[in-house]
Image 1 (cartoon, rainbow, N blue to C red):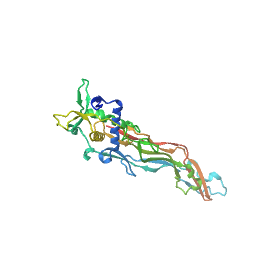
Image 2: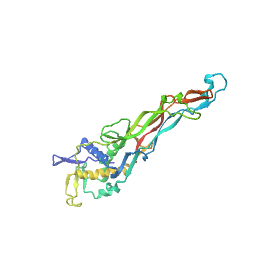
Image 3: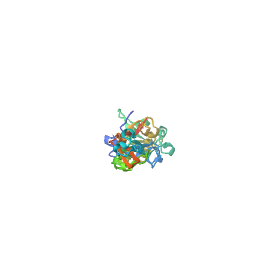
Image 4: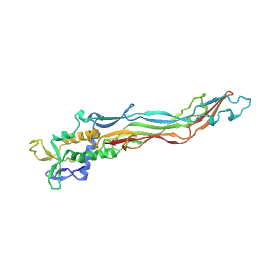
Length: 341
């Protein structure tokens, strides 16, 4: 990997190398361009959908009562109290059930070349505005295709993979429990963790033999998908060798790259690189390989062993049931990950 320090114009006539700040602003500019691109422009995007998203579904589970046990008591004339009911050893324990399934994250991976928005090494061969750098021997040379990747594109992808809300990480996606994040769009709620409100499962509601009570859900944590929109920056554009005037065998010297040329090169190039570039291909997943993007989503459930409750209906109907109890603990963790290959 060879990172070059591109040249730019100083005072309309002299040439100098990019400062660190100017280099950083160029990277932010490319990230913003990538973030602004539509799905149809190609690359790798995540979208919020109502259902049937392509990333793995996530389930929120919670506890329900054990099945009720209905007996006729011991059938003598004496009220023996608790002895008339099925005891705790014979009543089933509370069980978990799926409260809701979330499949709201859809990944779009579209080859930019199929949309005339891609850029490859073969395109570089005929490109007419190539950035330049100063060699150690004070000779100005045009960048190779790999130089452009190493200098302008790879650092941006580094930040897309590792970052969340950073100004450098435009175009990345991540999970947060916040309702808003700086420089980001809230795409929607992708997972809600709930537990059972134990106050909504009551002895008075114990049903006939074999029935359960699910009660109502209470929300523990809400998780949202965010997209980093990047930031608008003032940037300086690099000097290029101008092949447009006199042809490729007789270039017309150096000039500043135009904004249109920069968009046409860098924005297309990063979209193609994240789609299938060597060591730059990006793929999102739930619980796959790669870097964790934001907060992990946790499905919690009550961890108690069950609270034994009874209901006397009449002399021939004694009902017992175990209710959920305990505290909320993690049952399953879901992590949005971004893999780079």
